[in-house]
Image 1 (tube, helix red, strand yellow):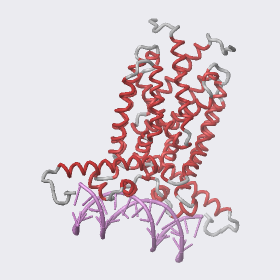
Image 2 (cartoon, rainbow over the protein chains, first blue to last red; image 1 turned 60 degrees about the vertical axis):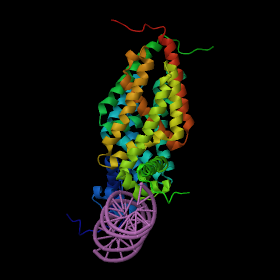
Image 3 (spheres, chains in turn orange, green, purple, red; image 1 turned 90 degrees about the vertical axis):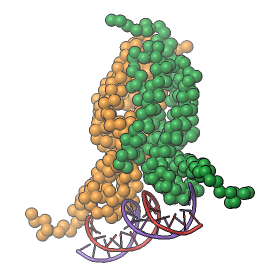
Image 4 (cartoon, helix red, strand yellow; image 1 turned 180 degrees about the vertical axis):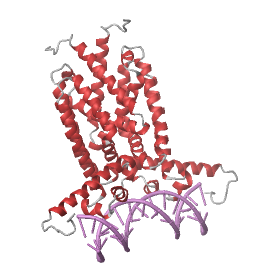
Length: 217
Length: 217
DNA sequence: GTCTATACTTGGATAGAC
DNA sequence: GTCTATCCAAGTATAGAC
């Protein structure tokens, strides 16, 4: 109520407002990437979506590419927090498959992987962007490897397939499935695939129970 | 030598020249998509690469999007011819894995899958483009399903995993691996993954030889 | 059929008012 | 810190010369 009559002397209020604006731009960038892709994510399109002026993109981020990287960071951070917690409570391979399917479902619904895909695909159009994107995708392979190590570490699978190769494959699969799902609009197809994978892991787990865990020859 | 003095009455020469120009533009579009992505594939960038005038893009294709679709058609056609022949000579699952690895290697080297990836990712920026791209990606899932049916059709795997789900997954994996490979520049990582997959298929084939091919309970 | 020239639009980026 | 105004580069598309 007394807002207009009490100008604060410290910069706290201004900083807060600034942070809010940055957040609005980042959120709008995420939405624009999801709806119109990298090629459609212009400063004007994003700022219009945020209900803000176009010049603020350059004031706060210096360039469109930097804003898009900030959007990628935000999405990546959200996913990391959310999925670290999910994987935390998991111990068996079948549980991990459960969580993976759940993660994919959330990714499709929130459109978070779309942001990753668009940034990876769009990176080659802007000099220097590929390296920036690469350093932000790397952690996901590491994270996936950690989840595999945790749940498959003492299973017979571990000696068959190196966790880092599997992790690389899983991340690639997430990206690829997202692309196809986004393209054909059929999210069920990809979800049934996770169901199949889960069946397979369960079955192979049962089979491997009959096999010796490791040979020494 | 007598070129300027002998105008031909039929349009054959002109048509031939036109076809040649179209081909130059399509090739340049492919190269531009590979190097600078969908967002960098402008009429100017493509025509400059082709050593032709920018207006020819619109004369021959009507729009940049149409030229890019023609480029996608060309790549898709080349791949289909090449890989149909490769799969033709295959009968066993292990041979198919061999061919798959070979196909991926060629895809990486030629950059053909990059074109698919860029078109899929870029499609959402232009109204109506997604549907066009989708109809051009669909055949690849069908083709992959055919290759799986042919080689795994009478193996125990067939009853475990529906071929169309596997095909969808394989195509997604190709797209995803291409993205990661293109991003980090490390083509060996993806290639070792195909090696792992081949080991796995060989091993599971050996294991399944001890199991009954089908249960009736 | 191809090239030059040009109209028009969109987008990146900055300057200055508020 | 935000908004208005503006500049300039790049992109789509068309018209007309060759």
